[in-house]
Length: 357
Image 1 (cartoon, rainbow, N blue to C red):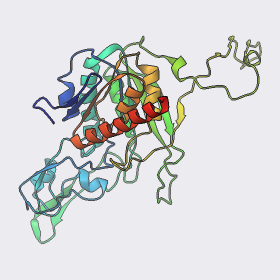
Image 2: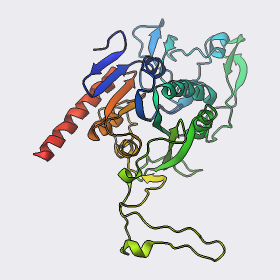
Image 3: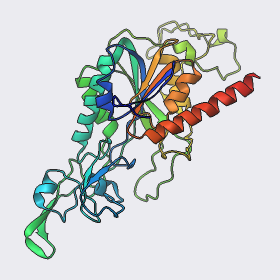
Image 4: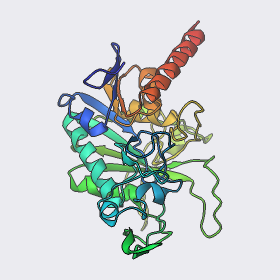
């Protein structure tokens, strides 16, 4: 049960909090987290049903609309002052929407600013040698022309739709907008990893290619940080022995001059990770595969360290952390997602016990 401090569940290895990520992060002690693995809600793609409504018809099944543009923008049939101020209302009864979830900001800049505020708190609570693994997807701009015109039936009250910063149908480039903003805040971008999704969702598009990847950024606070490459090395696939893989350098132009010998423990996995998505029926449709946090935590978190996910959702990061014997702290607006995580954890522990037996 949620307490006044937002603490929902605690045991010797897990803490779960309910509330806004930035607000809850502000209550955590400095330097207490060793590794962050998280995937914030993407801009303008999903509604996680966390809104509260004021006024309107109490019997109404409130909605902000079905398209990303409708959910991000105020409805134009309400007073121009409200729409210009970004006040969102139910498109059926006019109830005012109050929502703390990320991803419904009216512009990319406001979304970036939201994440910057959250990551500023992450900076404070992250250990000096800690790592942050930030997964972000992109989206396309829609209905971005903007207009001010006479409202139907009442020409004295104009309707208004704000213009977007990029052209209609253009890729927004949100992952890199966030990454560059965080870089300006002092974060060091050590890797921009491409998560290749072999079974990516099909798209009914005819004038562009379907998207089959997302970005995963490795961010650190300083030049020296914890990173265990040996924990995530991949086995060599060729049949040649290691001694035949050694490169002794060369004297010709455009050849590598340095000596290099392969590691017996395996090869560096590189910055393109092919991992299939795994839909979760009990929760929202957006959890990343557990393979991703398993690799991030194994490489970026010391043994017995604390892993944080400020947008924990159904708790995939928590499952990976406990599987690797790390502590876990999760934050989410929806307590029922924490319940899903605890049920998944119980199932995972049961599978581990059965395997050990």
